[in-house]
Image (cartoon, rainbow, N blue to C red; front, top):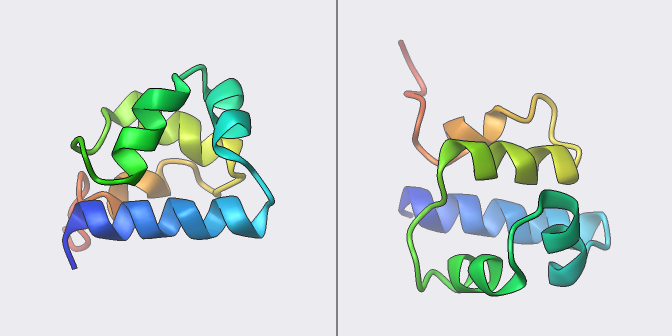
Length: 78
């Protein structure tokens, strides 16, 4: 699975787990619904680090920067 596929699947699972709709996620992150929708359908690339961390905060991912690891922005091993 690609990094994009992994992060999209992770976000969708977390949204379902926390009962967060696309519109709710957009409101919590300040990112447009259409942007998130295209990303989650893999019609656009992985968002920048700031947006990934905002999504992590909105979905209560601890630490929110774990989103960067899942998205392949931080190597799994140093």
